[in-house]
Length: 118
Ligand SMILES: [Ca+2]
Image (cartoon, helix red, strand yellow):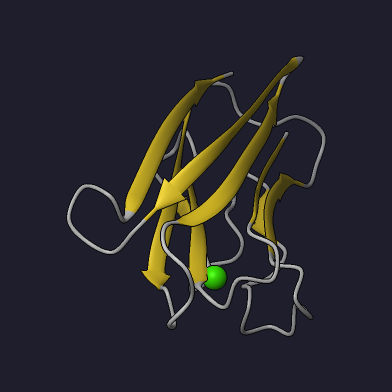
């Protein structure tokens, strides 16, 4: 299981937030969950060198079954071009998903949510 967002060398701070079937959110302020989900880093602030990628992945034997909610959130465009084009990819069980998500500041456009069932 893996969830990935990528937005190249754009200066924006975009966050990946994954809610596991227990309702626990994994994101930059809470990078591990007891379910085994982990966030690898927070771009661009963790030193992503113009290749902004955030991953939430599963570490352990088997991820819990149930609903996984994924939110892609524009925190701050930091003066960069709008919309910020973010590639969201996911691998859940034997299914894969990939979509480009355009994000701009403002209610309804700053966040994009997708739900996956395992
Ligand atoms: Ca971030």
